[in-house]
Image 1: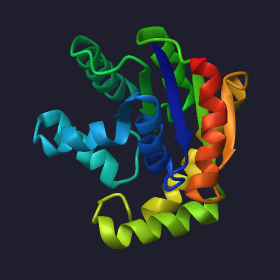
Image 2: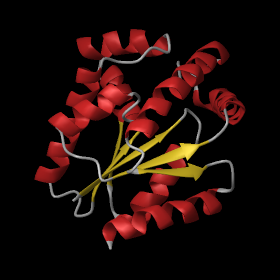
Image 3: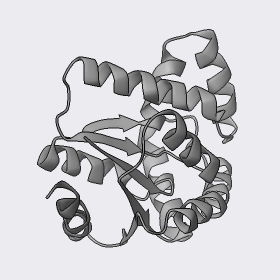
Length: 189
């Protein structure tokens, strides 16, 4: 089983490309953002503290996110939900998280980095905010998220340079996916 991290700034198109990767290859999709939002929606005490952090655009403590991811991977394995492996979407957000993931969960086989400009991220997120009603999609929070992302992501890309495939995510959905398949096919060959 292979593990792929999908990284890229907010609004880079990770979700759209993940849907296509899952459809073509059968990976089990784990979105750290979705796991966090599910936890918030559950009404648990952990969810309430997460809501407060996320509404301010701050990062959630690594141990909480790792626990949620590991729990979901173990559940998927026990239910036989994947033969191919795992697509970890939106995690790690910083180098320390990646190191802890590999130490406490499993090694990563490939990292796909969807690279778009800060201006593109901001435009896409403001468009999404108009329809999504997500608490973390407002202009001030968006600017802060993009700034933090650019610094933290650079550290991940540098550390894992031999496993990172950088994909220009400014193009069409089909053109971007063509680049994705060129990265994933050799991994599964």
